[in-house]
Image 1 (spheres, rainbow, N blue to C red):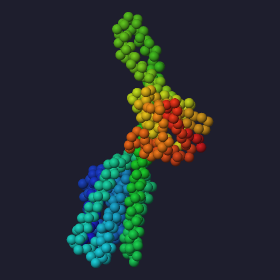
Image 2: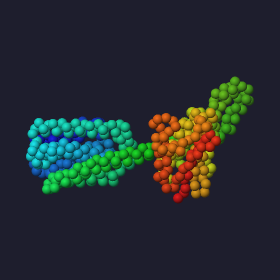
Image 3: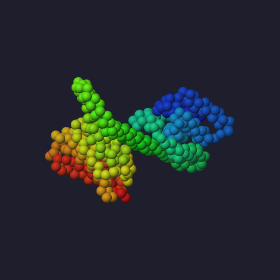
Image 4: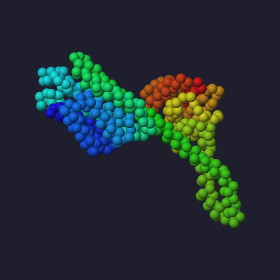
Length: 436
């Protein structure tokens, strides 16, 4: 009876865990009914002697995996959540029932799974188990809200089948080994090994999750930059259409003049033609240089930052010496570095008397140089040598992490170096990429 209640409580804890992080997303009421029904059937078959403890443990993981997969259609997310739930359940078992058995052996019959205790102690430990699981579930739920784990996995365009298989195999091996450990004379030593194994599974599952989230967010970020650049490309086509249609525009003007319709001409020119042409030609002049940059994420980033600067009244000059079609470093890392430099340039120059930013991309032999130059708010200010240190900032508390990240990224690239200098009331940052 105690074994049945313990298993029922673990099933309840698993359902509680899944419901807390995504009810109707990874599990719903029908799934919970299926989970409990499967447990009752599996326990009945176990009592009849047709399956062993290890098979029940594996079945527990598989059923949860199938339930999540049915809801999310995401193999890796299903594997991760099933592995996290199962490993957490067993680890909590270790620090409740196993710990009581080790500290108070006179209360236990000494038979695995060490749940045969006086009923009131059994209930107390079961309540502790649920309490610890609630705390664990709350932690995972908080992390999910902060990092948007489930939503990010849903946005991933990869299935990561190999990672799913590796994690599932590891969890299965540990589950079998867990039961095996208590059939040996050195079960204390094996028990420690099993505990460490489940802890590693938990860490591995969470680590894989953060790895996928990071990669997916980077992919989403690049896609957004590409989409933004493509949108601007489409808008710039209007400039070409305007140039091709200027004869028709002149013809329209001549019709007003021939009919001596000065009022109509004035309305047409000032209300329609002038505003439209000024906007189009302004975009043409500002972004003409970017036609030489054929890397869409970089183009999208520069366009976005140029627009931010312009809204703050900062003049931005973009110069690209010749066509740039490829680079020899990961795009996402270069985008992050340039984003940091441009953000700092915008933040500093907006308070200058004549706010200005110059972005130069120079192709020189086997080297590609990215240069960001901005005017300083205080021309007499000297930038500290500590500017690259994490946490250092001249802008207030809690700032200054950007350039430290910039330095870490550049130093992690074999063919990239950087330089920063202050001269004539301006601060200039350089990124040098060699074609290795």
